[in-house]
Length: 191
Image 1 (cartoon, rainbow, N blue to C red):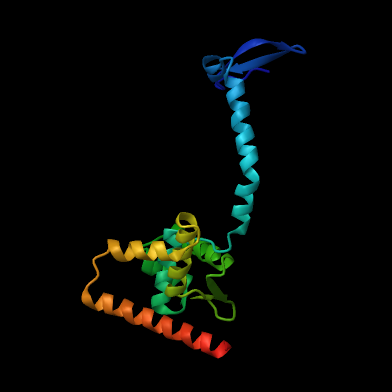
Image 2: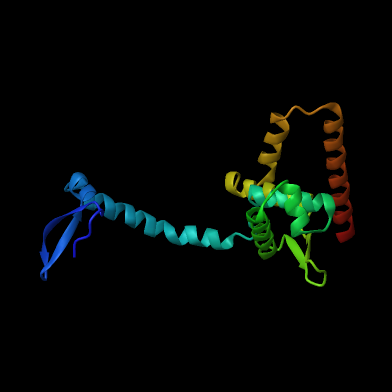
């Protein structure tokens, strides 16, 4: 059966039915095109198992920008309702904005980043992940992608690329000293 507007043309019949050949197929056919496609499919199939295993190994789910805006508001307030969040994020918002915030909260709840209190009416939401937890998670995800999981190259680059003032540098030194002290205490305690 022929349909109009599908970009094809009649090329013959198969059991009395018209057969369609898409225009792109005729324009791009060459003796090597099938070989290239088979080669690409082989490569994709060969790498699929490692790609799928890497996808399955992901533990942390990233937060979208819209979800982050909701989380930031919850971090500032501690606990809030959908209506108050909507009024904050979308002043003069409509029902569509309310539904958007509701969906974002459902996603964050599924990711275990917020908790819904069903005992309150209307329901309230509170963050389960704090700001520093999200920062750590995102830094680790970036290190996994770019530095094979090593944080040192990522942090070194951040320190070198940013213009740290004297207070920031002193804060970093103090943090490193604290980490060294805690590691030293852990090593002495095991002896």
